[in-house]
Image (cartoon, rainbow over the protein chains, first blue to last red):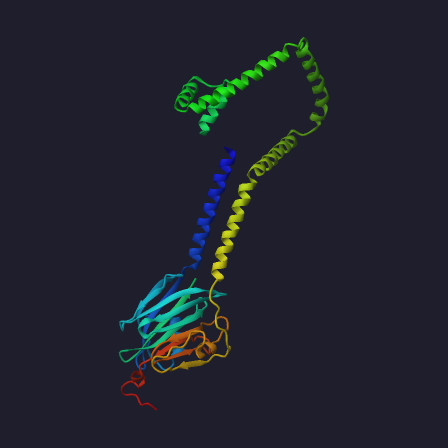
Length: 149
Length: 223
């Protein structure tokens, strides 16, 4: 009877360890992906809705453009097998998938299916990066990404 | 056999069943004939042991046994009284408590160490698997650490294998920046990667596949 109790106790402990490990792993793998769709023009002004940090970064990175209008902003979650999708005002879609992790950086794939473009990149958390160039109205679209653990 | 059946069986063999317990146990035996057989077996063994002990005791003379035991206890208590009086009661209590706890702990560990170690080993194995999965990711393509701009303009229908494109081979792998591992695309287009040269800038993946739109915006001089 006592041996039976020990075995059952051991199995319960094992189950709890499994649940704990799985939930920890899931929580560990889920990342926040902040996204913004910005319309950039060579004339115009900086949209005050854009955060100060992003305003500075846009001005420094896209020196040829003066006008930046934030069309959409979203907080998404990304995990292995659960990509984040952005619907662009042009009717296109951008898909960001998590491939894995190497060191501090997360390996992502950015895909714009209509253009048949796939870019694999390594992004450390808390670093702004952009996809730019899709023509929109009289300017270009800038997709801003910011990964957070 | 359930725990309750086990408990009642033991109490029955020891002759300690209350009336209510006896009714309960009999109901159990009616429902479970194996329990009744078990009870009969235990009772039989008990009877054999008791009759054997009684047989043995017939040949022993207990005359004056109680007096002799009392005299021995009195003598021992006189010898023990002196050292006991010299010790502080508090210290005696503390010693007794700590010894009891250690004994309990040792006894508990002695009976439980196998499942605990098994659980700990499995937890460690699961943790290793989880950590291992995190690192199980494709190898990044390395290259020069010089920040640069790279462009590809293949002819229609061309496709650049992800890990062989010149874009990938020219990317920076410096820590702390977003770097490009590989680029693949189809059709006539230009993919341009701009890496940050100074603080505040960000990595940009330019996609330029519409030459018409590279024209200056209306009202702007090209040069």
